[in-house]
Length: 456
Ligand code: ARG
Image (cartoon, rainbow, N blue to C red; front, side):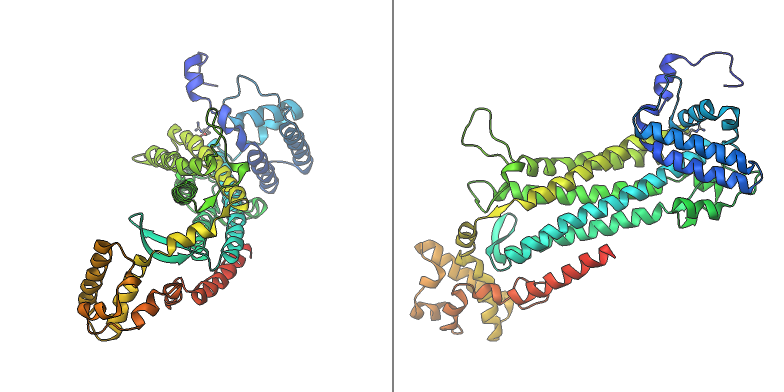
């Protein structure tokens, strides 16, 4: 470093160097450097021959990186310095021209934006795979019944297809959030320099379109300070992993002997080292547990950014590890979810037996009274009386005799027993988005269209 007489202290070096983690930005750094070199030709900084030579050198660097043969050195502070150092070794002092009109501040912001844009697309692709599997499952289990729960107490029966579609829509919203993070990453910082702009007329538009950005960061101070796109990705990842956690939690519950609703795929379960009978739903448990880790990645970066004056400060180097951790965690989780869903099986008998609990039809009997003119609150009280009576006598609601019914309300007649008859509750849920077979079919169609839209 030009103005320094002392070598950096090794402890400071260890604290300051980011190569150990930012080397995964290498492909983006090389891409950015190629585009920047072309802009330097346009600005008259490089001749055509020099540009060719630099591009050739960058190709060689890229090849070494890809082959895992890039000779990193302990004196490389970060990936940007490493690439430039190696380029200069390959092409000679000409390599030193590449950093004209560029600062590591706009360079690193550009690399990171390219990275986030790529991984946002990947997250959407992985979500689409899991959503496709959910649609297949929902279709196949379209009219299987299980209890729906509130407070984890049996509430009203629903169809399994309906419940699986609830998972589908959670993921569908995640896809929108990841896409929005990709859009946020679409403004190119490159060409803004350290913070104030450049002494060179670079064709930023051309560089942006070469790199796949759809617009320019319009303020040089903001360009080098902005990490909102990373925060947006982390937010999307936080909500997504929270969803995966809730799904994982249901699969864990459903696979207990107590519920017995599903059997996770063997390939996604493990045995116990001591209890031979065990098959544990480890994948579902881990999905359940990953969410706080991703949340803390979000909190980590939000904390780094909070109170940070503009423009670049070294604090911003701390943006990468939480981001990378969240990317790796969420991508692996999504792949595991898709794989786990591929092999899951459901136990129709267990679910139907649980759903057949007549108490779940209590609201429907109240609605019968309402159709006959009774205010709902009053009907709620009448049915409460019927439930108490059945529980006290250890009988089913349908076992209350026809003549006893009148004692609860004049308005109760044979239709009371029809409401309690098998299955009638499910198909009585007429409303759009409800659990009747017709409404679930309509919903499946909407979900299919919504997934197809994502692929467009
Ligand atoms: N390694 C740095 C980072 O990740 C690159 C930018 C360094 N800029 C600087 N002015 N020291 O943020």
